Image 1 (spheres, rainbow, N blue to C red):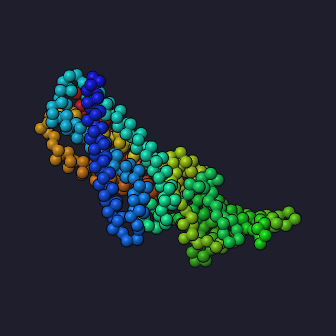
Image 2 (cartoon, rainbow, N blue to C red):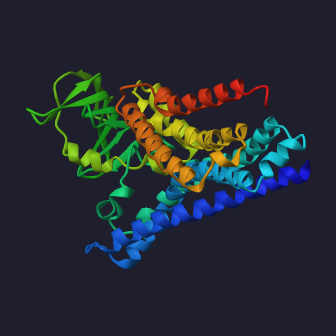
Image 3 (cartoon, helix red, strand yellow):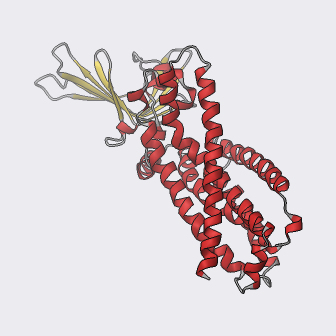
Length: 368
């Protein structure tokens, strides 16, 4: 039985790595050619941009490679009558499924590490390797808050005559949360502190409406400071466009740091649905590798080689992959726009495949 297990695993891995390489080469050629045709970037910048995106490309093609590996390895065993011989020798279909499940689990772990840790690590280096990386390459655009703020929980920056900090900027509502403004005098001594639970931008007045504004005045005086509660709108030097630029990249956060960041925002009462989609997507993209491997393996219940051909397999892979990415991308976009919950957005399509695999296995339980 060990020899049969080695045969199944070897054939599966051979097709997996072959398809991974071919699909990766297709993405590589498309990325490099489109980059080299642009006139505003150098060849070196195109190559560096590709290297930064390489882990992302790998995570995109790995699930499809699992599907191809199961489909084509089983077809090869069928065409050589080896699949029939395997089952005739007493090797059950359930054991066959278990073998594929084991090897696909290792691939899923690789996919998770690549998506949740290696990809953020590469993206975090883009500003060091490329000048104006976001302006030149849209695929390297930022999302969320910067990883450098996670330690303190706030973004800090220096304006002309004050320091400014906030925990989160909601670009849709044009609202700042947990704001503190530290004003200093000409001798750089702290003279007052303004604290707000939130600031909401008023377009007509080009000012900010405060929520729970507390002003600590006279901090640079020998007497006790004054503590005032205010309700009138305030004006600051920065505009909405400035905060959108200050807002940096959540995609550079590793899995656990992303979880800590989301928990921190959730405690502040901020809607974290968009960020939960990103968090759950690391998991769903890994689980789908296992599901795809088992989904294509349902053909073992019909080991007749007359029902299989390379053309049918290739057509199935193309159509299925296209439909999957369209439907999954649609659900992910709904989740990011808070139309559906993050769990539904990330796991509804994989769960449908799980139900289908379970139904096929239950239908053929006597053969298993």
